[in-house]
Image (tube, rainbow, N blue to C red; front, side, top):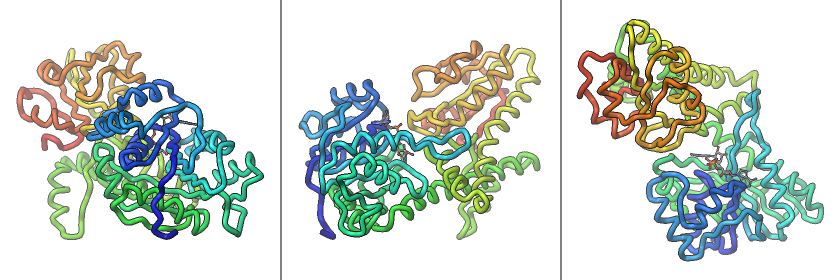
Length: 419
Ligand SMILES: NC(=O)c1ccc[n+]([C@@H]2O[C@H](COP(=O)([O-])OP(=O)(O)OC[C@H]3O[C@@H](n4cnc5c(N)ncnc54)[C@H](O)[C@@H]3O)[C@@H](O)[C@H]2O)c1
């Protein structure tokens, strides 16, 4: 059983940035996979072999898996030998985790379960969530021995396997990253690991479910705290009239120092969200983690304030904002600090023309739509016409604009792309 490799029917619940690549790598390695999503646009697109978002190497793998008949889509939960839950885990207004998507998925899976089935939670979750999944299923299926109560071999194996892939490199990292598989019992971990053995070339580390849940949160809190250090440095150096990029470059000459790069804030689906789950779980103890969140959340306001102050020195300025996504060279705009910065500037300066440019964004995000002074234009035009150029995302396409056509313009490079 220890080195078992899964070979049955598998359902992936939630076919987004994590679920779709996971379903696809399993399907391309011979597993019969059904993808489930509540969003009919996603179900229809993937059924046609299309990929609803940009991720290198994913589109060809999806169309191949669909064409081979290995990957199909449904809105209805099927009977399967294993289920992977990859639904969102946003936070509530009080920063606690919103587990309603996971609960809904568990309730949909429960009626379909047969003894011997495996349920793996991949969604990033606070400690104890995998056990809740087992409880939620147990409430609907009292006929099944669930692992949170049963000391003996359970009927259903429930485990957590967090995902730590980097958007932009998901298809490589999904195969090569080490995986942590935390079971509600040892058997649960071993059974769940058999799924990842189908495609993973990394090490598969078995542990308990709560440690696996916490390890994932710790990874993102670690990143957040280190980015907060860089962001705080950028404020300190600005007040001391020093160049933060030069200071960091010099400090990083130390063999055991690796200061990260500052930016306009922290975005994406994970890093600005997950540390709050730790703060909510241990509010008294998690003081540094909370402060890091506050430092990073403050940074978009600081950048906007600086640009607004610069604009007020002009009679009739125009501003170019380069980049809207949360990081370079991806089309993901979730929790993007760049969007927040642009919105703050546009609201504070309603009479000022603001040109926004991002090669990965075809229409203005909803938050920005209500600003009449905002236009999406190409980067060349924005740079040519603007008095103030604000670089928010270091997309490859923007790097080539360095030092060209910038004469006499105010440059605010939040990413050090032109440093
Ligand atoms: N995106 C990343 O880089 C990343 C990395 C590591 C971990 N995670 C975690 O993975 C989880 C999923 O993230 P994502 O980025 O793939 O989210 P996503 O929003 O891209 O995809 C989630 C999908 O789940 C669907 N969904 C919601 N409720 C459903 C239900 N009851 N049944 C079926 N489908 C349902 C949504 O329609 C959506 O398509 C989250 O917990 C996230 O924190 C994400």
